[in-house]
Length: 114
Length: 113
Image 1 (tube, helix red, strand yellow):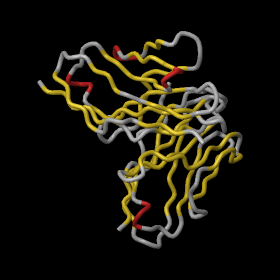
Image 2 (cartoon, each protein chain N blue to C red):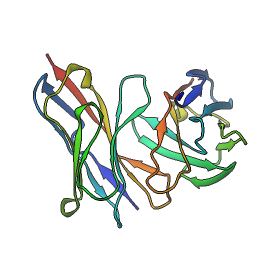
Image 3 (cartoon, chains in turn orange, yellow):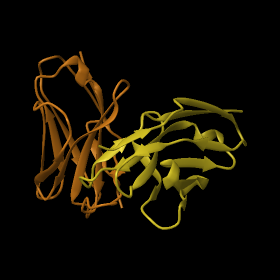
Image 4 (tube, each protein chain N blue to C red):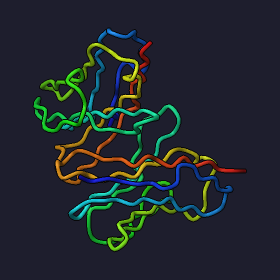
């Protein structure tokens, strides 16, 4: 089975722009979660989608949003980019996102905001 | 709210030596615990997980971890480290909201030849 794929792998944007990142989960997985990884804050949970609905949300401003499509693919969007949004954005998929359901991570999208 | 602490930011061991990475968690109920490894420029790879039952859990690449409820710990061990084990290791606990992982700050492992 193919793993979790994320596109693009690298992205450079300037402050004030917006960006959309894409994630394709493992075939058959219906839950997709997003995490932000920075040197200062470490790995932080952004949100989780299941059956096209946001089920959980971390403590991030409204500039961070996401969605999930009927084929379980997910996108996350960051509007009005700030320098502090520079990070590695990781997507993870799991079967149904239930208790103890293992999350499998993609390689990440490295976003640099100038 | 749950939290995870990895007290060691960096650890250096010689190739062939044993390894123990520490992880302490704070969680009100029986936790689901995970260890992931991240190589430079890569995503996270699951090494092992604990849900219930046997407190000694075997994982991939020769790693094991022991859950100790009395110490709120889930330390990762390997009897003999290989140069390819050099990476960053993350301990995580699953929150009561289901599919939300809370990660520790990570431990960067360096392996001396």
